[in-house]
Length: 360
Ligand SMILES: *Cc1c(COP(=O)(O)O)cnc(C)c1O
Image (cartoon, rainbow, N blue to C red; front, side, top):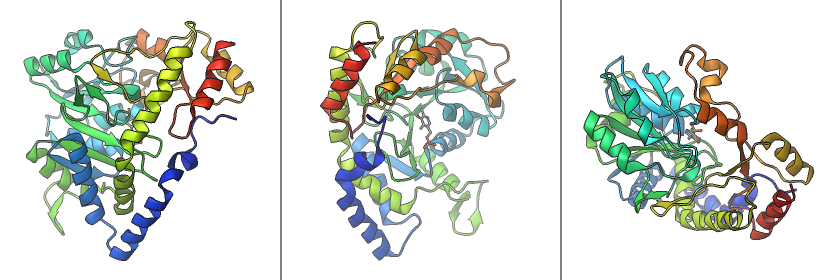
């Protein structure tokens, strides 16, 4: 059986280092916002070449607290791609703002910059770009639009650790919101997230918000949350971060095997000059996706669908987007299939998947 992901195998190379850092945490006797979190925040901001990093509890919280920290007016509209993972939209709703969906480009699966200005109103205050599957959004036109319309940029980097656009790392164009959920390219051994920024005001605000709205213990300035990056996870993340380039290179090599060898019946991810893709997910598209998935499973190959239901068709979102239609997003959700491509897979695994796929 070729698994879609095996977190035991994907982490096994780092077990000794994890055990070591766990021992250090135990010996320190300090378990909330200690040296481990501080060190990871420094390590990760250095990795990105950003001034500040603030560790929080999850990717969803990183998005929510970024948005809260901007202090936008109550009736703000926030632009977000229609094919994103639900968390991006949840963060907007949790802040009481209105999510405004924009269709993706059918080739890159990322927000289509040519469709953004159509939905900008006087209430639009920010855009949440999502670097989906590990490919950066097309940032130049997006930045022109945000400059022209005075909009903030929040980047959902949950799938794009180390991905670049024109040699610039994702998470450094606006406020970067990262997830360290175990399956992500930079995955912890539990939940985790971080916000990355060069803006001191945002840092101050997020540090307050993650800790009950408090700067000084037992004195509360604003209505806050408990959303702190766990001390032990932070230490594991510093270990994992040292290996992130190795993980990325491995995934890129495997992706190149798919790209070079899959027959043309399958729509493959596009490769463009200005983009350094990290393949959090390697997806293909096919009109008979469900049949294909069954076929692969019979041949002992497990796959996933990211995602089976578009946000605007989720039960939880009833009434939020009215009767608006998002045909490109719907088309992607109906035809996309994510293939095995993880740090635990070998070139042999991928060759086997290719062989089976090409026989479909
Ligand atoms: C995983 C993910 C999130 C949420 O991250 P959590 O750490 O699970 O809260 C948000 N956005 C995208 C695009 C994701 O893939």
